[in-house]
Image (cartoon, rainbow, N blue to C red):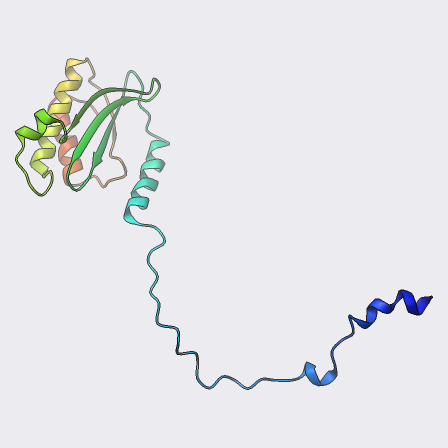
Length: 162
């Protein structure tokens, strides 16, 4: 009975001693069939910006007393919104895609710093008409430089506090 109960050991027997110590010779020529591969960054610039925006949004929140001034810029357009996050309501907005604003500017390659300054004036006037004087500035993950900086400074000059 002992022999029949231990019959499974035959299938688990160690290999012969000669196969334990076989050493294969090193490959004299490495595989040349694989080309040199350059991998791209794991995240794109847009994904990095979105991550920065998410990180900032954890700290910056618009309230009815101090709504959030959110900036979005693309290669062709610039958009600004004043948002009350507690009620999820847009209080004021301006964009270069709006017909009245687009007719005022005559640019071909995209909004410039001058266009951003004018957008800052427009959003500040719109906010002051609605009684909004204090806002929390949300740069949208963009660097505070160029168009974003020009928009913020113009909005400050025209009466918004942030």
